[in-house]
Image 1: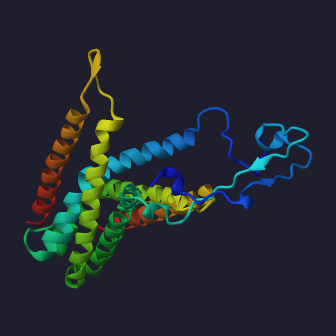
Image 2: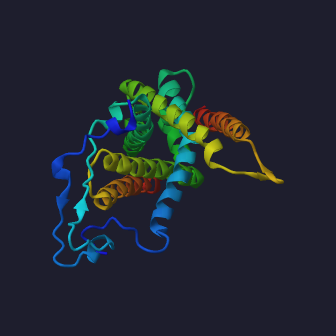
Length: 161
Length: 127
């Protein structure tokens, strides 16, 4: 499928005369010729454009991974609020929290994988008259991820022991 | 340029836009490096009893939250994640064809701010 098929075909209503109230330069800095009206091309993108290609779908999934992560923190705030009930009344979140957390974990890992992979693309680290290879940057990012995961998990476990 | 059409960039750098994207990049890195460990241990392994987690019992939870460094750490991480969510959802809504990016942005950043303030209130009003 070509890129041009993603958007709706141009419709006759898309091209219309724009009333300029006699001040064409106010619109976009381009004065219309006296014999030709200005044309406007309104944005027209189908709502489901992101379902038309696998890459678009994965892009949308990547963007929305941030939602389960935020939801997980909201659930943590619920747990934090329950701390006010005192030692006798405190109840950690129940079994359903595990199911929700598994979904949030998949989203968080997908966010980590996609974002750390981008590091090689967006970072330029000068090294003499060249730059560090992107695959070296990505390897370092994933190495740092593994190290930080072990340290953070260790601290959480140590705090609960 | 007429404000009602509003699609021509203003002259000069858009510093606010730069700040929002810089915050996003930092929040995304923080979330990418730290969040899987939190969710794995606190959300899955801790509740299943595979590993201990500080928030499963009152004594360990209260002791951890009693440390000001832990409070600041948790607030920074959750604030980054709320901002990350607000920023990304703002652009998703825009890309789905909803106009009014400024208004959507105000709502999304506002929600992220409210959640962060709620977290700060809970963290810093506990003993």
